Image: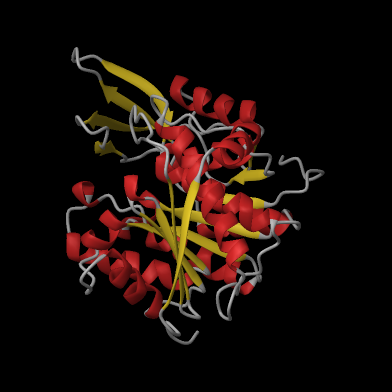
Length: 340
C-alpha cells in the first residue's frame, strides 16, 4: 500500500530503465535511468514529495531502480515488484557528451500499467497538485495508457507538465510518432521541449524560438520551457512574453545524460515554491518569477552535466549554485501567442 500519510505534491508517470553506457574501452556500464525515472529522483532530491506511478520489476535491475527511488525519498505507487523484466537502453556518448540510445522495451515492467490504475492512485493521493510525464510515455504504442490518464488529471484540476523529449531513433513510423506527440501535448498546461525536439517535430519557424512559439500557439498550454544546450534556456508565455537565460560561467561538461530531466525538475520545484498557478502565462507575469524559474532549472541541469550519468543535485547544491553562478537574463515582448 502507498504511504497515504505523506503529503504527495507531484506524481510522475513513464519509463524507468537501465542505461547501459558504452565506455571508450567497449564495456557497458549499467546505470539507473529513464527520463521519467531521472525526473522522479531529481524532484525527490530537491525535497518534493513525489509519487512514481509505474511498476518496477522483481529482477535485480528492478530492485536497484526501486532502491534508488526510495533512497532519494520518492514513493512507489506500486510497491510490490512485478514479473515483467526491466527496460534496457544502450547509450553511446559522442565527443561533445551528447547521448544516442537504443531501447529494449517489449514486455517490460514499467509498461505493465493501465490508465485506470494510474488515475486511481492519483485520486487516492489527494494532496497532489501537479503531474509529469513525457519521453517514452509519448510512444503511440502506449496511447491507451497515458492519454486517458492525462485527460483525467486535467479534469481533476491538476497542473499537467509534459516533456516532449523525443526519441525518434526508436520509433518505426516517425510521422505517426510526431502526430502522437503533438496530440499528447494538447493535455499540457506546461510544455518542456528542447531545440532538437522542435527540429524533430518538423515545426515551421526560422529558429528555435519561432518553432516554440508555433508549438505553444497550437496547444492549450500556458507557458513553454525551451532548452538550448550550452546557450541556456527560454520561457515563452501565451501572453507573449519571452524570457531568455544562461549561465555566463564556462562549464566543464562530462556528459549530458539526464540534463533535461534535471532542468525540468528544477523548473517544477520553482513552480511549487512560488505557488505558480496552472494558468501562469495567460496574462503578463513578473520578470522576477520568470528569472527564478529559469535560474533554478538551469542550475539543476548544469550540476547534472558536470557529473557522469544522471546524478541529480540536491536542493542545497542547487541553492549554492544559484548563490554563486551569474545568470544572464533578457526579456522580449512579442505580443499574445494565442488564446486558450
